[in-house]
Image 1: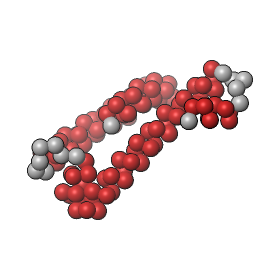
Image 2: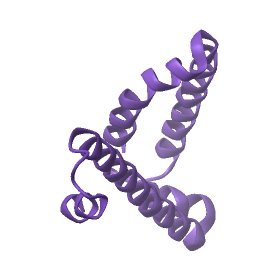
Image 3: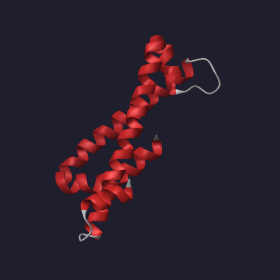
Image 4: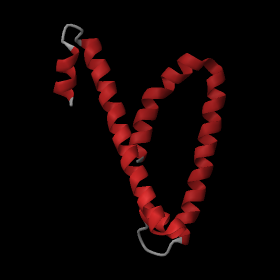
Length: 112
């Protein structure tokens, strides 16, 4: 999970600063602080669940029962699918930019 967020974050931060200017750095700072605080809360929650290697679905089950486990599993699957789609779109756009004479259908079929 960290790899996806760091990798995509590294690609999107220069663009967001270019679009939002220096003012957007304040918003990014607030979001970073919010992420750090939620990370600390998540660590505390993991420490409260018994077990040696606690997973996110186990944490969801400890909080909300079987429904929580299924909900967390569904969210994780959607997150990975969304990250995969974002990377594919990024590859398609870059490939189209580098090779403008290649039809879009070929780009989509070859990189999928």
